[in-house]
Length: 175
Ligand code: SF4
Ligand code: SF4
Image (cartoon, rainbow, N blue to C red; front, side):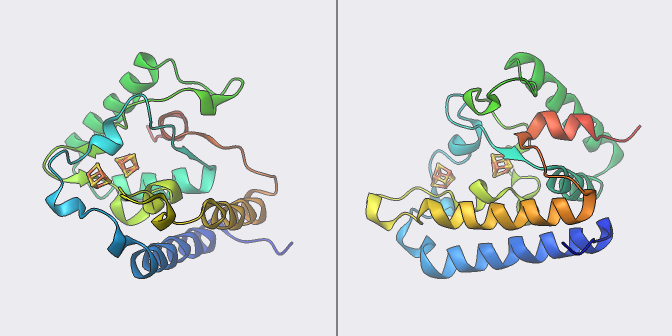
């Protein structure tokens, strides 16, 4: 497998997410409820019984880059929210971490997802569909996440772990 610098891998990851978003938008999203007119905006991200978004190391670095575009004060607030989420929902890297759910600390009232352009693949794929048959197939997410695993392996020379989003972001935060 050809090695990749982290800088190059981040660019590839950003492009991969952009392509995936465009594909979902063009082929599926028009059959889903419009998030702009949703009367419970953010319910999907804040549902502590539903959200169990996991990411890899490379995605955590990309999200950190995105958060660094915010003011230092806002970044401090977000990382505090991340730490609180870990504590409140007892999140860690032990055992089957997919069993634990949490309200996502990256959702901001009045704005939405603070890392919209680089959000995780399940978040891009998720929308509210009335008919089950209109949902994007699970394989799409699986195929795209396999590509993300390859990018991680090429960059860090080992197969990546998937960890709850708050756990990874907390573990690689600067300072
Ligand atoms: S995904 Fe569903 S719950 Fe979330 S904002 Fe869109 S319509 Fe509302
Ligand atoms: S990363 Fe963004 S889209 Fe995904 S659950 Fe968190 S706030 Fe919602």
